[in-house]
Amino acid sequence: TAVMEVYSPNKVNNIGALTKRKESDAFIGSNSVKHIWYDFHAECKGGRWDKLSNLLDQVTPALNGQGYFSVVPKSSNDGTSDWEVKSVQDGVVRTNCMDCLDRTNVVQSMF
Picture 1 (cartoon, rainbow, N blue to C red):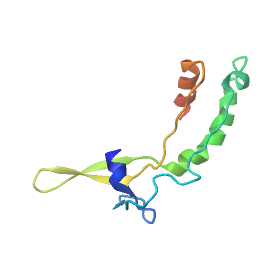
Picture 2: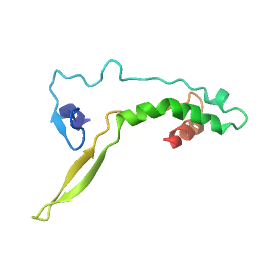
Picture 3: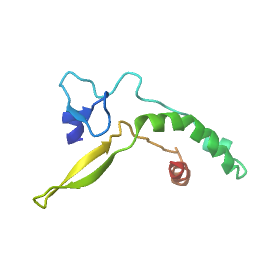
Picture 4: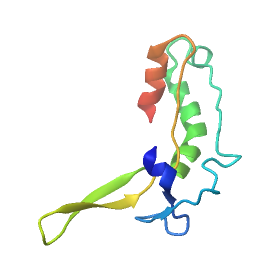
């Protein structure tokens, strides 16, 4: 979290660009937290694992919108190496099942 407290993605050119965040900038926008209700037990009853595709269809736009974090090493002439940020991620996914860790793990494995 130390990095996020100081830097945030440059929304104009998101690749490889981080800009210093102002103290007045909000970390989270008012529409940035989404909740998707999915009753795993009811939907997948009787071994209907194919029904998980319905959940994936609902989640995919949010996953695509938040991106992923990627860096590559870049070497310099003096033998040291530094990192070049290729893309930044501006979201996370939290998955939990109220009574079963196995179902949580099944859903997480789809992503």
